[in-house]
Length: 111
Length: 113
Image 1 (cartoon, one colour):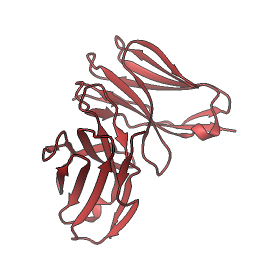
Image 2 (cartoon, one colour):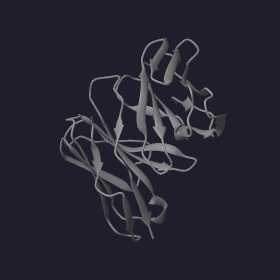
Image 3 (cartoon, rainbow over the protein chains, first blue to last red):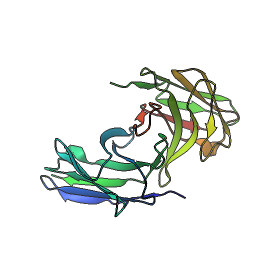
Image 4 (cartoon, each protein chain N blue to C red):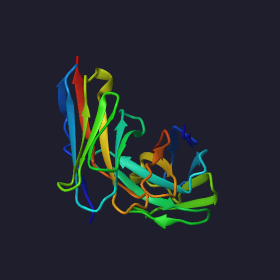
């Protein structure tokens, strides 16, 4: 059974701080990793994808991948109240576009 | 930008009715997916399709069927709606080529009374 694990939270950070969201997965040969943001009552929105070890930056977001340790993380710099949402980690274990989703981490950014 | 459109944002139906949820994507994606999302249970895959007239069962297909007569359209059918099918239903699509993300529609919040 291939699994993606996330701490459900809530993770509470003050405005302007760095929010760090973590995700672990069960299969070392996985190729593709995605972070989605989901506001309450809305659908998931893709915010980052990462395919190779290391960091990938996009604006205030940085995705970090460590395949040897089987974890992927998302850093949000200068967190804003508008970043308050649930963040879903998704892994394509077989490069076949079937994604396995983690349960999500709820982030709360307090003004 | 990818556009995945679900026919209804909110829907209320009665127990025993046959319910159709429609999804259309405009990116010529080969793959299309139907999920349901419930509090505490996360996203669960109901069915997916990787080509016209092709369908594969996901993790929770019982009580559902699907239809894909055209590449851009993927329909989810609740054969005889029951109260435990009250949920948020999400459609997604993606390219066939590996390592591609899925793009989601806005979702349909379905209530079965």
